[in-house]
Amino acid sequence: DYVVVKMIPDSRLPPRHLHAVRTGKTFAVVKWESPYDSPDQDMLYAVAVKDLVRKTDKIYKVKSRNSTVEYTIKKLEPGGKYHVIVQLGNMSKESSMKINTVPLSAPDALKIITENDHILLFWKSLALKESNFNESRGYEIHMFDSLMNITAYLGNTTDNFFKVSNLKIGHNYSFTVQARCLYGGQVCGEPATLLYDELGTGKDSSASKSGRATDVAAIVVPVLFLLLVTLGIGFVVLYMRHRRLQNSFTAFANSHYSSRLGSAIFSSGDDLGDEDDEAPMITGFSDDVPMVIA
Image 1 (tube, helix red, strand yellow):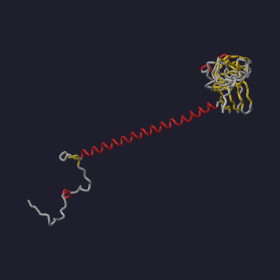
Image 2 (image 1 turned 135 degrees about the horizontal axis):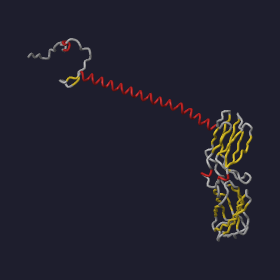
Image 3 (image 1 turned 60 degrees about the vertical axis):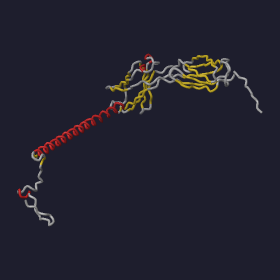
Image 4 (image 1 turned 90 degrees about the vertical axis):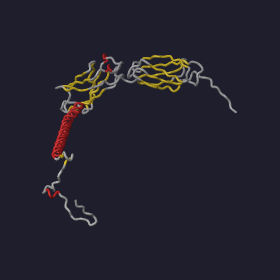
C-alpha cells in the first residue's frame, strides 16, 4: 500500500543554498535555489545589496520559474565589502551572505634609484592595466623598518615616483606602493613591495642582485670567449698539420712513381745493397722436378 502526498508550496520559506559563484573587481555572480522544488509559476525575488563601506543600499528584482537561479550583481567597487540578501517579493524569510570584491592590482615594475642623500621610488602607472583606476585617485606609500619594527605612512602622490629621505645607515626597509585607500582606509589596492638593504652601501637589494649577476657575467663571458678562440686555433693547427702531411706523402709518392709499371715503388731499406742481392737465392732442386735447359 502507498499514498501520494503533494505538499502545498509555502511562499514564506527563504531561498535555499545562497552562495557566490564568482567574484571580480566590479561584479559578483550569486546563485540560489527556490524555496521549494519545481515552481509552477514565476517567482519574484528581491536582491538587496548593502555596501558595508559606503553605507548605501541597492535593491534588484529578479523573476524566474527555475528551481536554480543565477544572478550577476554589477557596478561594485574594487576591493569593496557587501552584504547580499535574497528573499521573495512578498518579504518572506531571507537568505544572506557577505562578499568581498577583488581589489585593484599592485603597481608593476617598482624599483629604487639611489641618490646622494635620498632615494627615489619608481613604478608603472596602474591605469595601464586597470581600466577602473583613475590617476587622480593616486597612490599611497608605506615604509617598514625591520630594525625598529615600525611601519610608517610616508604620504600619497598622483605621480609615478616618490622621494624618500632621512634613511638611517644600517637599517633595512620595506617599501609598499598601492592604489590610495578610500573611505577611511577600507578600500585599498594590492600593495607592491620592495626590500631596501641600507647597510651604508646606498644600494637596494634588487640592485645588488643585478650587480652580482653583472659581475658573474663579466667573468664568464671572457672565459667562454677565450675557450672558443683556443678551440679555433687548435682546429686550425690540426688542419695545417694534416695538409702538410698529405702534401709530403703526395710528393714522396710522386718521386717513387714508375711510369713503366704504372705504380709507385717503395723500398724497405734492407735491400739497398748490391744488385746481386736482388736475385733470388737458389737453395737447391727437387728430385721430382725436371730441369729444362734452353
